[in-house]
Length: 159
Image 1 (cartoon, rainbow, N blue to C red):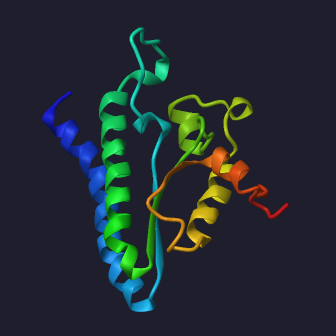
Image 2 (cartoon, rainbow, N blue to C red; image 1 turned 90 degrees about the horizontal axis):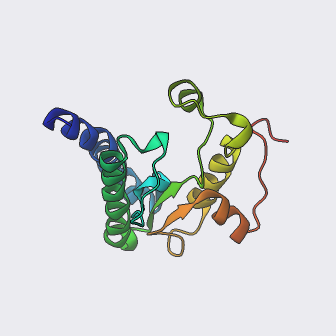
C-alpha cells in the first residue's frame, strides 16, 4: 500500500471522528451531558493465529482494522477525559456483516446471511440513551449488547 492510501485511511477512519467530536463537545459541555458513538468493525480486534484462515474480505484488513483499532483506543481514552463532563464515549461494532446498501453492492454482502441493519440501530440507541456516568468507555458488539440488556429490536418502520 502507498503512503497516500495509509494517510487517507487514517483521515477517514480516525481523524474524521476526532474532528466531529471536537466540534460537538463544547455544545455537550454547555448542555451538561452528551453521547459520542463511534462505529467500529469486528476486524479491529486482534487476530489469532497461526494458522490463519484466508477469507475474501481479508484484503485491506491490516490497514482498515488497524485504524479502527486506533479509533477504539481513542474512544476509551476520550471517555476517561470526558467523564467529568458527563459525556459518554463508546464504540459499536456489528457481530457480523451488515447488509447496508454499500456492503451489498461493493462487498457482495448477502442480506439473507447477515446481521439486520435494525440490530445496529437498536444497539446504537441503547448506547446513546444510557446514563453517561455508567455506560461509557466501552467497545461493544451489537447483538451481545442487545441480548445482555434484554433490549428488543424493532424494524426501521417501528414494528
